[in-house]
Length: 68
Length: 367
Image (cartoon, rainbow over all chains, first blue to last red; front, side, top):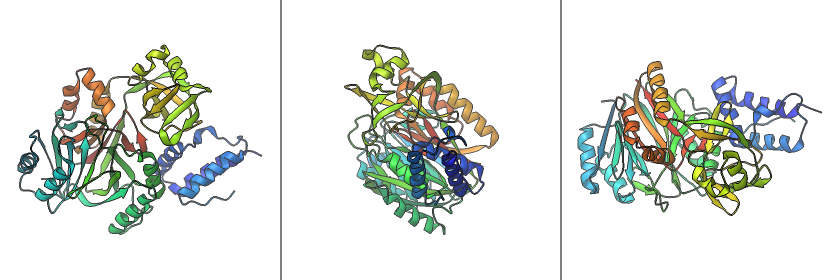
């Protein structure tokens, strides 16, 4: 299976920014500084369990719940 | 009045504070910011500043050099008074840095004071100002936690101690603190903008940390090689000369085209220690320094053209100050800010979204 990491990242950013592009951009930078480079994941990226866990942990820190 | 600035190079605290008070005049500012050399006894200068601005929120820190419109100074105190025409509201508190979770308590309390919650604070209306104990090593974790809690932009710097690297202090309302951050939620009346500037271009080479000790800001390996060896290869010098290139060739974590600079501090064995944390697996760009003066001037002029600037609060990395000093350009840098009321200081780290190095972060208050 592929694309789950990108889907989770997109969902996290959407929930956090509510469509505000400035907040979306800042959130991407916050993720980068936490160790998640949002630009390397695509719809074809493998569903790497380690990467999924990192996204879920970051979402939890931000008070955001994601559906896996 | 709106914004007034003052400086003193008098080494006697009460005389320096009296000079500041006299220059700022008989005003009743909402907020007084001050940045003071570590040559001033921390508890005494904080108390003295609050005494003469008793009805204002008074925030400050110790420095590794001070900045005021037209000048880069040492062994001085600089201050800015902002009244209700510039700052509609200010709510300030301290964050003890023993645990990042302490940021939760402070942010909830300060947000509550403005009738909001941290996450609901309007990022177009409010901006966060933060000053850290510059030797706490807690900037990354605290900035991350604040970023988790709120969408407002947070900008600031890490206190210095004139390169003694012994003890740095932050000040709030007459008190002096270590292992603490002072955090304020400001509501600029006529809007604000932010400058984050670092004068580097890419060398076209990359280093990926493959073994790190994040807590101690130590990189053990880049790309599977001993970190110091890999860094020396990347900048094209023998290992024995690698440390001499740190100031001109730091590395950058790239957010799009924007580097978040990570500055190497020292080599120990084969490891490289940094001035801020570096994450395992995140590719870093090797950078090469360019012209601080022209980069900063052009950026400030552009911002001022787009939206006229009433005041600048400048958090300028000590490594930039040392580079300017080495190049004999401190006076030229100070003059960039001659026409806009500005204060700032040479920091042990800059804050904007996260913790960064070799950067100037500036809060611009608009007219």
